[in-house]
Image 1: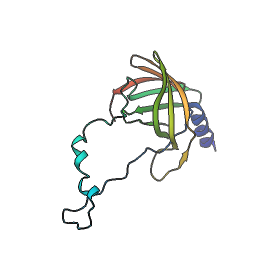
Image 2: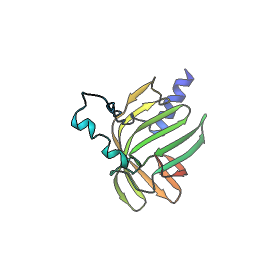
Image 3: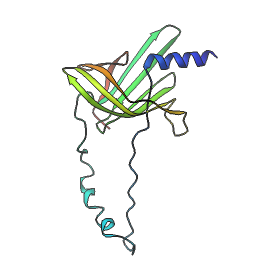
Image 4: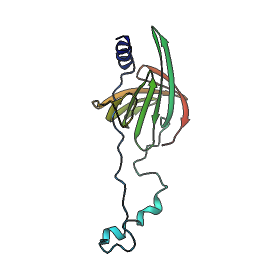
Length: 165
């Protein structure tokens, strides 16, 4: 029973609520000899030459990257890593085993103070296909960026990696 209380306390501590990453359906190309191919199917590879370019909605901001932090206090200690990707997805993973994933965007920014909009959130522990996954409500949360330090959800985080997906 203590494990349930500790897990509940950690969820309250990190303000956890997460969501599934948006995933695109894979494009199935028709075979060269496919007699049922339509005109749209035959032109499907025209845009593939730009596959290595960032999507037009890519987020170019210093907050993009991986951030980590830890807390020691009370009966438990905890660690967390947030990854904010340029494609607008984010993931939080922590110990004890807790995770969150979803989409993020900058709702507003004034200097180093951000309002981050978190959507399509899923709580997971950890985020595995098997679950348990629970949807969480969209939220706007404040974050403060100072150099390679980010304050977010009661965590003081340090930069692990800049940029990235």
